[in-house]
Length: 75
Image (cartoon, rainbow, N blue to C red; front, side, top):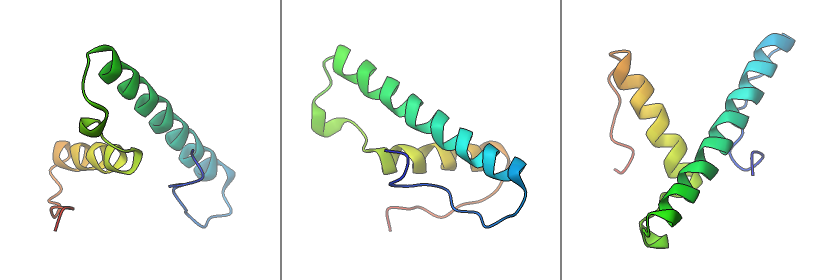
């Protein structure tokens, strides 16, 4: 699942590559937990965010918390 939307940063530094890998891993695990919680709460499957939507929402939250303006991805 991580290979579908992997963060691709071309760098020779192994530390940056590891950071991106573990960020991808954390996003995949948190999405699985989100999906499990939604199923336990009885939310319809169509109302649950897809993995890409989840990643975009997390990115938008991080941007807004740091005061960086972002455009609406739904346009």
